Image (tube, rainbow, N blue to C red; front, side, top):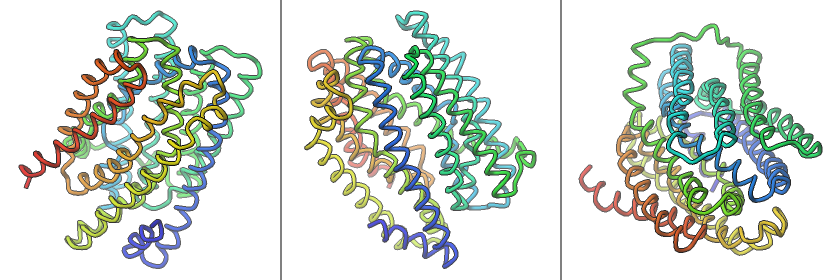
Length: 425
């Protein structure tokens, strides 16, 4: 199936393109697999060291910040990639404008976070963790360099930067564990990671592609055009991030940090492989855009169906495997202190099938310039998720949170395809 996807891309890129695309994909897969294993190893070691309660507190702080990260990205990621694919001559204007907008967005989330924590019962230590983690979003503005690499099929340089960052971060975390560091130190490491990655991206952009950040230009007209295209994705991103983390926020407030730690461990395992649908859909996205621009509806529909089938098949296979071996996986990875995570893992892992389909579906909607319809879907999904979580967590604890996420997404998709799609046509 992966070879078929590669062939789809090759039809537009030609012989040199297929060679570059194959090498690029190999690097990305290698980096993601390395990240999966190294991140899993070190992440689990950190969780074991902190224990369910402190790990739950760290997860809560990360989740709280994650609710606001869509504001920092401004929904520009796929939009800028699409524009670069259409007209690469506008590289400096697009990257310079996107960087400025993302930097402004990342600075805006700090006062929003301050306002948000006023409505919580957090103590000062928890709020300190939140703001330390949030400061890392400022450096994520340099991720616009990745947009250029994606559009040019040169993401291997991003893989290089990620690998270096992963190695340094892993070493630092191991040193912290061996020296019995505090929870605060692990929050600071997260910011350190974003700084190292930003430096790596800038280095490869300058050294390997012979471009400079000094060439970037901010253009008000382009900024306005990007924001007009991305505003539905900004709101949709807020909805997505809220849907992904609202369960953990509610578990902390309705039950305890310890239960959140057990739930977060299960979620951590269930999300290990999520890079696969993101990688496949991200790689095939330029091909979808080009096919649609060529007005080849039949070929576009074929590639769309192939992408949907591939994503769903991958999701079902991986989720079934994790469900069957959930008890063994949790025991080996997290130890007996987290044994209760196995039951919730058997449920929450099936969110992966929805993630696989959603990754493909959202790219198709973006290609069709129907990103505004994503907003309606996310509003429905988040609203249902909050309602279900409120009642299900009370009755079934952390297992209820897992069921709520799945139920909300399925009902939202059914509602969208049965009712909304007909009206769009």
